[in-house]
Length: 83
Image 1 (cartoon, rainbow, N blue to C red):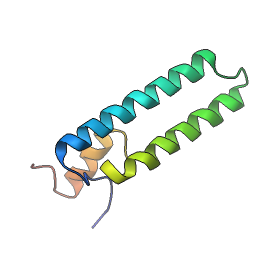
Image 2: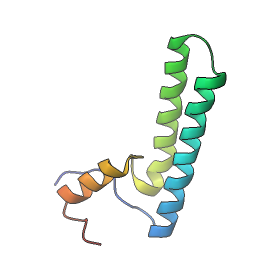
Image 3: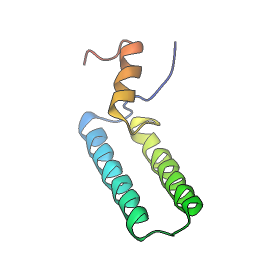
């Protein structure tokens, strides 16, 4: 069976975790674009590091995914979407 992101905590904790992660990554992206370094290479490096950090932080709660469409796709493939 294929693996993928799955909810590892109760529904409310998972929703709160995804909301916080989405807010933080959106804030970091906007801050990096507006006040970040002028070098495109440094901007890309900072954005990549922030995304990897948020995925690692959120992996204990909802698996390695911060994209609802990706998570639903894996749930559909594994037949766990009927909750």
